[in-house]
Image 1 (cartoon, rainbow, N blue to C red):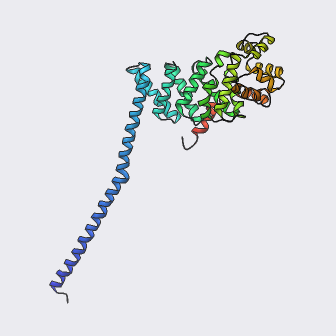
Image 2: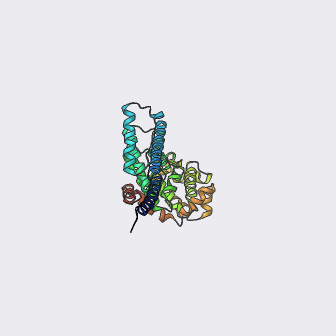
Length: 322
């Protein structure tokens, strides 16, 4: 028979176990709370801090843009909204888009044209997996060099960029870095953007790097503008007085290359008399010999590049990374 004292003792023991269990549960709950703080609250706080920094970076970037725009009130808010809309549509951060917009505004574009060019540039950067500001700088320089205006001009230049990449041995990133150098003398010579791109694309197939190909392209054009004594004599035989006059008279750069092929008969020594610059000679030799057909093919492909930007952007936007 259980005595009252024993019962009390048993109850006391049971209550002690209960207290221990409650303490254990309390510790577990406390640890769970700490874990929730680490796994939920802390990340939320970090996310908030990151969001604040993104907003701050965008604000700083746009203020740099607005130093040139000098917009205020509704105009400022409208520009911001449009930049954010381009960011959403193209998968680029608001700060990246704003930094690219700085390039466009600094190149002299304003209003709806500037936003349209921005959209084209960001689609190109996305489609080509390239850095946004460099892509935009290359685009605006190409537009200025070749007198391409508005959104139609921007679309044409960007499509041609993709045509150059398709025709040559280079990435879109490499193109955006090198094209401004390759095209530097094109306007003075009167060479089209298509022929400039075909020259660069062809030389990337046979030269060590895209940079070397761009340097050679530029050197060839410089030599045609400021001819050697041998090239001056050849101009006289052709009945022209200058490189720009030859470009105009013989159907563009491709026509001049054909005339040079005929004049030199593939002889490197003859080419060297015409092109004194080592960089120009390295480029002109393949263009007039082994790579002449490649140049012709590249020119056709680049001239028929309409829609390449949209196609590249659509492909990249379909991926999970976008």
